Each structure stands twice: as C-alpha cells, then as structure tokens.
Length: 245
Image (cartoon, rainbow, N blue to C red; front, side, top):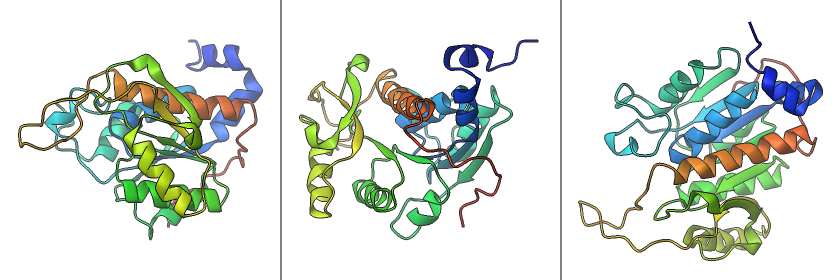
C-alpha cells in the first residue's frame, strides 16, 4: 500500500517533510478560514495541531465551513475539526482547546508553538494575539476580512503595512501601531467588499459564499507549510509535551 504522504514527499523531499512532521502549529478559530487552514495543515503532514475555538457548529455555517455538516450541527467546533481531520489523518497529534482567546489565556495557548494562525474575527483578541506573538518572537499569520467578497483568487499574504481597501486591516493597522507594531504578515484579498443587504435580523453581519473563506484558509496554510519547508520558520523538534497549561 502506498504511504499516504508519498506524493507530498516526492514534491518536497524527505528532509523537508520531516520538518513538517515535527512542527507544532496553533490554529485560532475553526470557522470558514480556520477550518480550511486546519484541513490544509493536517493533510500536509503537520505533526501537531492545537485547535482553538469556543463556539459550536450552527446551521448558518453549512454554506462555507469545512467542519460543518448535518452530523456536526450543535457540536463543539473543536470536536468537529477533530472528526474532519481523523477521517484522513490518524497520526497527527491534535490538542483541542474549547476556549475563547483572551489576553489572559493567549500565553498558554501559544506555549511551545512553532507558529500561530489567527483566523478569529474578534478584533480585541486579534490585537492581543498579534502583540503577544510579536513580543515573544512567535511567527504569526493573520487572516483579514473574507466576508462580502466573491473572488477566491484575490487572496495573498503581505505585510499589514501595505494593505488597503480592507476595513478589518485598517482597524488592525491602527490598533497595532498604537502598540508599537507596524509589520505583520496577513492574508488579505485585493477585492473590495461588496455592498450587501442587512441580514434577517436587520444587522450588518458579513455575507459569505462557499469558496471564499476556505481559499483564505488554504493560502494561510500554504504560507506556513512553505516557510517550514524553506527553513524560514524554525521547528524546535519532536516531543509530545505540548499541552497548554
């Protein structure tokens, strides 16, 4: 039987794949962006994933979230992500953290991680997570807005300082500049947000479609994987003591 990562190893080589196997990545948020990022990282052979989310799967998630289906509605998103990953990956170590990312708990959630993916939409939490990672030299890659967009091909990773046209990026630039941070790698779309009607409750919640948030998640997963392969993200090595305190 062909080893499940045989084609990946042919593409990147055994040494680079070993680095992926030894890598420890924290994924903050497991929705449309984060669920796809976890999918991409786990299928690429990342050896340890810390899966962080405080929410449960809802019917409204079915249109775009990889972890969402009729069997997972009402389940915790961390459990749904684990179910998704275990369908094709039995080997990676998965640590589920069913908590909200706050300033107080972020240090424990980032402990022992080689890199962090920020796929949350809580602006205050995004700010605190970015500040902590920058101050502690933990590579972090953050998702900007994916709502009210229709073009899956417009996402790329760039410096937050060079972004334009994204309301979330604008807010993050201001908040982080006030904290002394002017540079941060982010995944952002060059597409301007589309004007959409209010939702069923009359609120201006973001609208979404199946292929846009997952595209951002896969771009983020690809960026981390490529940087690990190239040695741009230092991987500390093996070991199973990765539990957040």
